[in-house]
View 1 (cartoon, rainbow, N blue to C red):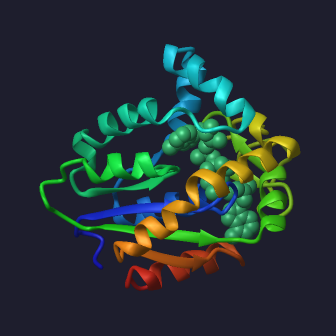
View 2: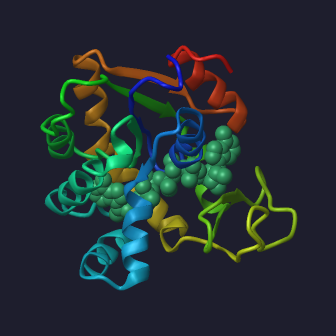
Length: 221
Ligand code: AP5
């Protein structure tokens, strides 16, 4: 696949599987937007919007924000001009109703959807999430052990302050993993049955996972 063709990617995987990290790299490689529904919701919370206030209670408990709300947000985002050549969706769909909603979006028949699911053992997910630090200013991600910033608490990319997400507390991490198993894992069968799913080993370094994704997408790495 060439960086110039239309590409519509969905990254699936449990919390901490590396969807955001890899979506960033894929977005840069294919020059299409990285659409993270989690980031969009956190931005709404930051703005204090009605949607943000509604979403926050669900997110703080590690639960899914209701499908109808999410479908509205994503439809509106996908209709923007920058999605014409495609997108990398990270964190959506997360339930069968959301996947049906995505199926119903009219892409004028251009470019097939590819679904890549990252597989990572649960113990590793907990380690990744508990150590994650995110830049408040630019959203860059670090990990206290695996990808530590050069200076404690300071973003290497922009110098912004790093923070720990509220839902990265260990009790909430377990609630999010349970929600993933119940609500999102059924999407693997959903997309496998349509012949759209490729499962990728999400363990190892960021570069190793990125190389596996590139192989699955048949691009040079
Ligand atoms: P969201 O923000 O989407 O969170 P998530 O799916 O739980 O995923 P994460 O962002 O926690 O993990 P990730 O897989 O992106 O991993 P990352 O690359 O960050 O959603 C948050 C909440 O919003 C949900 O709980 C829900 O309430 C709501 N929401 C969002 N979308 C919704 C929807 N569609 N419907 C309903 N509700 C919705 O990596 C994690 C850490 O690991 C980082 O520190 C990173 O540096 C490190 N890392 C990454 N790759 C590696 C590697 N290969 N080796 C070592 N460390 C690594």
